[in-house]
Length: 529
Image 1 (spheres, helix red, strand yellow):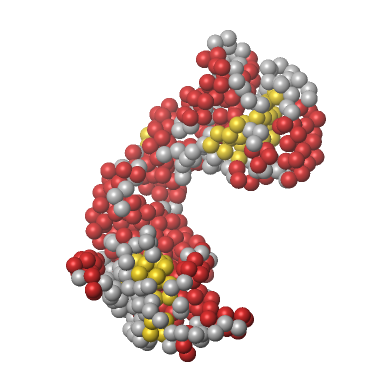
Image 2 (cartoon, one colour):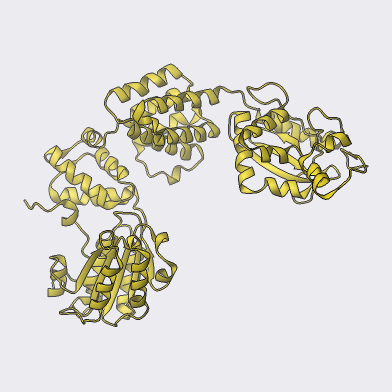
């Protein structure tokens, strides 16, 4: 048996063999038929999705000796065989990661002028082109602007945003996409069948999912498992190589979290870690499972590319979680996966994620039916449109005062702006805050104050809440902002703001101190003076 790796042995040799990149193959084939070959191409996309393989196929196709353009590359002519065997002198592959300097590109630029030795075109494939220095890009730019007619450049990169716009504008760009699980699985089935290797269905799916959309990684893993399994690959062997646990154990763990059974969840968590699984890998596996559950809970079943046995594990868990709880769980476990504490005490970040998620699920929430009935009552009785502010879950005292106190911990500037606002309504998923002046409203709608406000609201209520900022005019919202609502008095205030209180307003105080402004009249809550 050849010592060549499976990935190299099964590298695509024609456009039709390229899996998942049909949009690129079709465009290049049409360009070949019409004789509209560009002098420079940019292939961008995640690693392992076929960028350099497509570049080599293009190099064969433009130089193939077969007279039938639709049959190119035929892989039988001298040029095609030379490319496949890596001996075509007119195909130059450059690794930009190790040839980043301007001198390397100047040397390339000097050689470009020489005509190809045996082929029709001289092809330069520059892999990871984003690694070139700025000076090297500038040296390459001149050649891309005025290339010789016998040269074709193919630039490949995983990070196209790092390439200068001047270079991008001189290339035809093709974006390679991540492959789906079913596409990778189908290719693995073909390779395993041709290689005489028996692979369990569950093992193939696990390999395909672990590849993250990259065919090369999937085939490399299959190659490793072929040696490990001696012609027979079971699902357990794949889990051993990947360092993962069975999905059913993840489902049991997530189920315990959903039932708020903290002791059982912690027991299952530590049982898996004590069994030898790397905590970081376990965290990512839990995140992946929760992400699938989140999509299923949100009605995105069609998005999930999962076998029936995986769906059978997920579906019973859907009723155990609210959407808010799942969003929080995904965030907490994703944070645990990135936590530096993994090295010091491996299980601690995961245990914290379990307990914080369970604690959040145990907090009482504002009932949606009550909010709906309150809204209906507001419609029937216009005189009672003043929004009722329910008490903050798991907190005591005044909701508005508590919110201002929390804001002061994060950002005192945002706290000062919010003191000029009014809490109109607070519900299970939205808080409405009104301002009398456009200046305050626009300030609170900018990025940083919005982030701080959302963070403070989440701490106050125990779950994410959307903030709606409105402008008030004579006790009503401006048209186009939402249903009209009358502002409530500030906590601890009457409907009338006293001049002494107004002088404590940071905006009013700044106007008095800096510009000599004077407070000449009182403003009541309903807008009358």
